[in-house]
Amino acid sequence: MTAVLDLRTVTRVHGKGAAEVHALRGVSLTVEVGELVAVMGPSGSGKSTLLHLAGGLDAPTSGVVAVEGTDLGSLSRAALARLRRRSLGYVFQDFNLIPALTASENVSLPRELDGVAVRTARRDAAAALAEVGLDGVGDRFPDELSGGQQQRVAIARALVGDRRLVLADEPTGALDSETGEAVLRLLRARCDAGAAGVLVTHEARHAAWADRVLFLRDGVVVDQAGPAAPPEALLAEGSSR
Image (cartoon, rainbow, N blue to C red):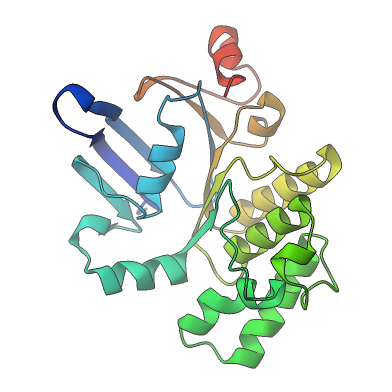
């Protein structure tokens, strides 16, 4: 079976000379269909860099990042954008909503750009918004929504359509605990239905939704564990931002 996400000995170096920073050092990760992997680690450990590379938002200094067998580094800019619209859902820490578009338009935009009829894309957007508890707010603009509501719009945008890989960077950061659990339940259900997911989190209770927990420190994978009993020392580090 082809992995949905395959990182092979990936390194990412920022800067040069005295300013050189090794964000990732030879990291390998495979995520299969139906699998949700949580990534934990202290601030600066490389968690967000890993997610950026997995989503094609950045390119590795060395190594290969492949989505469903396609090496992202082999794609043209247009082909990479097309793959991201069709196959990837990304939840950013800072939401990345377009201020001039309504909630419904933000969610439907990737589908419309990919040629889906506007009526169909808006219907799918309404269903995705309802899934995250935002039924009826589709005509509001981002600045008319609370931070938690904006986060849920961003999550709906990541989940709309047939996304094969969902990448979530602290997706519950702006949410209350009840709504956060509902979002994680939704992410878990999407993986159980055949997608693959990578969740960056600093909370053990959120990592417990995952099939595996990957621990990063200084850009290196230092351990992997099941969600029930992660190593306590690493867990303590993962709880710091």
